[in-house]
Length: 344
Image 1 (cartoon, rainbow, N blue to C red):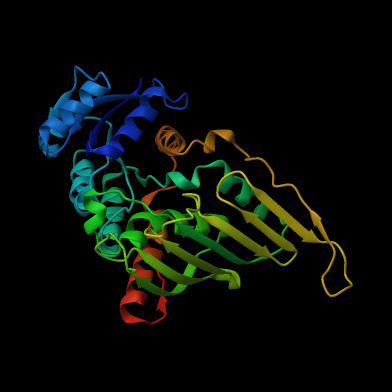
Image 2 (cartoon, rainbow, N blue to C red):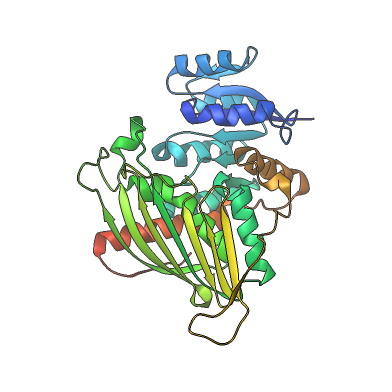
């Protein structure tokens, strides 16, 4: 039988969720949307009509809809400031909950949600869909192969002039909290080790159309002596990078570069003489599992698989909080102009 799900938050992001659930082969027939909730009732009604959801519960009060429908799942697509209350409500009604990122507005709130999910015996996970793409999976597989030797550093550039409008224009720490978490989570996944400290400079450059924090430079220290350098801006016009950033990953035997799209270059040292050592190009392997490369659909499918198999999903909140901790440590470092330890 398909899972019965209520989706809360019917704004623009909900369209990607509902499209994946309705159309993607990994999800087709696995989820029945039985309710939509939004503070603005016409928004929920319009989304229901768009997806032909004619016989479902539609409301403005999540507690009432969950009490009436008693679904298996809650899909949380609300704005970050409302997340804690929505997840708490879902867990209280016995739902497994899959949330948009960031998983909470504070680290303490995130830890509280983890404790609530454990007490309820429910799965609580986070949509880190940008780790579920072919490029990230290929890089992780290459690193695991040992072809680059021991990883010593990861560098990424994220420069995009994004004009969203809406709540992001007024958010504090908009780049770090709303977008950089994808990149920081990807770096943590690639490196395969825990972050330990960060020094960050956050700015809102001249000409920014955001209220606060549209750019940041951060140096993260990971276990095993790995350094991760992040440079990013959401108000950089003229030469957009990929949404996945442009990457350089350095190991003791060689280097990989990735443009965030389809261009990979990987070379390792083959000679032991000369000012510059001789190099050879190496292949970047295909993803180990193609089903893990479909973004939103893959992360939702992983969530469903984990529930069915009685295991923790890859993006479970008790792991994803490490990525959230990177964000809040970077914000604290920017505020204090000091190196900040990361401990979760």
